[in-house]
Image (tube, rainbow, N blue to C red; front, side, top):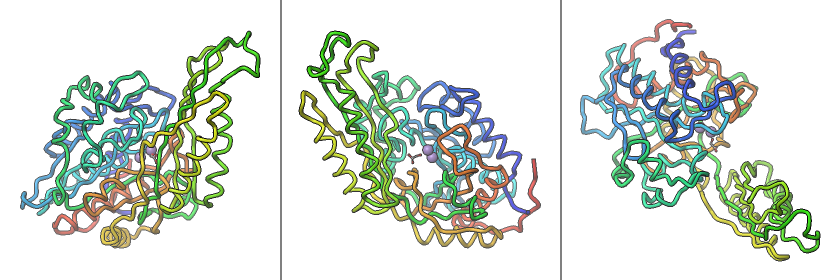
Length: 423
Ligand code: GLV
Ligand code: MN
Ligand code: MN
């Protein structure tokens, strides 16, 4: 197997980033603006600098590393992904794409390639929404899809607003509006990501070229009842918010099944207050994550979910839904898909076109610039879990596709592949 990307260096970058976790030994937990995130930011900035990139950070913590073009006036190609993680997640979800950008920069430097068009490696913040509901915060802000004023309203579980977290991280949230990228200011966005599903591994393929990302919505359901004494309140006089919430929740999986085979619905987070063993709960909040391939399916699933929640009101309970995120199904650029496919082909890699069931910064960046997304295989299809794994040579093949496409799109000549340096 020959190729460009350096497996040992890629592994060093992934493992180096993975030191910044709040849960060592129990997966990667790197919430945005946390001490672990600061460590990862410093690591990335140092590696970008070592790769010859000029590093800057915007007001919300998106990191950019630029390779200047011989024509600096041309709109840059952006390449990257996110650095934050879910709680107890894996080391590849997000970092794989950031590392793809940094490794590509190392390759440009080692091969003394000077692109005509600038290239910017990006490490985006708060994609997962593990700290502030909704997620995709960095990319939504960059593309003007999130009003910076909302940074004072979004709150984490401790009640800290995104604006406060940004200030504590050492940035000025009042400047967030300046992070917005003007239409036309980005030539293209490329992202590499692990597949997070079983298809590539099952088919024995190296590369997935994503042509479409499913539609995604997130809701927050609040059920209000009345607190009371667990020992003295007869069953027929209770207004138990948790019993009401569970009755709603129990109906939700069937809604996704009714909408269609590829629709999915997940309740992953629930808060029960006041949270005493001998206290009847008066407030329950839970998240609902809904995804479907077509917009008609997604809107139907959202409407059915809202109906079920509203049907939970009465008998002393009040049930409300808040809409936190809605991203319709997103087609990616056929032109970039063709360019990625041509490079995979030229590298002798097996590939297929596929749909992404996971959300990605790519689906937001696609609103700003033609966007391409490359998948590499995930062992056992597992992701958002500590067991998440991609073999480093497999990641290297994906990075070869990104590097070759960048080189082609940015306008530099094409040397022959060298033997790959193995770890
Ligand atoms: C991101 O990982 C998502 O699909 O929620
Ligand atoms: Mn993820
Ligand atoms: Mn991800």
